[in-house]
Amino acid sequence: MKALVAVKRVVDFNVKVRVKADGSGLDIGNVKMSMNPFDECAIEEAVRLKEVGKINEIVAVSLGEKKCEDVLRTALAMGADRAIHVETEEELDSRAVSKILQKIVEKEQPQIILLGKQAIDDDANQTAQRLAALLNAPQATFASKVEVNNDEVLVTREIDGGVETLALKLPAVISADLRLNEPRFVKLPNLMAAKKKTLEKQSIEDLNVDISGSLKMVSVAEPKARQAGVRVANVSELIEKLAAANAI
Ligand code: AMP
Image (cartoon, rainbow, N blue to C red):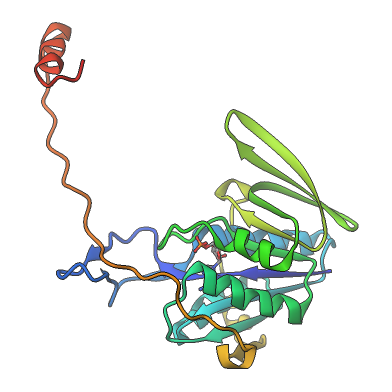
């Protein structure tokens, strides 16, 4: 059984991004980039499924500029067997990403398709859902537990006020939540060994996908700065202030 895992290169979650002065986007020129944290959980889960013999091959896929090779090397160091890089300088929205991934899935024929539940840069939370629709495959989003049994996968997901478990026929699309697992730390020898693994290049032209945009980012703005709070001496003063601000 084969798993395909989509990994995106995003601004590291520790970095505080700045909006460009003209509001045309974010200034990410020299900031640290990493694998999207939800995608680390997706790779980790695939590796764990391989370790217990449920799957035998893991293919990591990333779409974007040349530097995406970094996150693919990390995925290989974590335990993926090979990687596919769809190299492009084009801005890709979730619609374009899902259409490209559809082509890769059709070519690779994986039984388990794992993605992160959302990319922390655009927070779109759409790609897994769109991909499942394009493939006409069952989907389970925000997975916090995955159990593979023959041609079926049981996925537990958190919902308002509890958890639900879904049974999906394979092939299926699953998106990983942070609660799914704790991704392993990548050790230097594994990173070195990962250099020997296959990293295949593909282009959007090879895949024959129309990624013409349906979406345009118009502007980006910083959130309004919050006003400083004030310390009140007692409850009556609090009530007075709230009443003065028409908050009660
Ligand atoms: P999004 O719908 O943009 O929030 O992304 C959800 C998930 O889709 C991510 O966690 C990744 O697994 C996958 N994904 C999105 N963009 C890319 C990309 N450029 N390359 C690889 N995977 C991606």
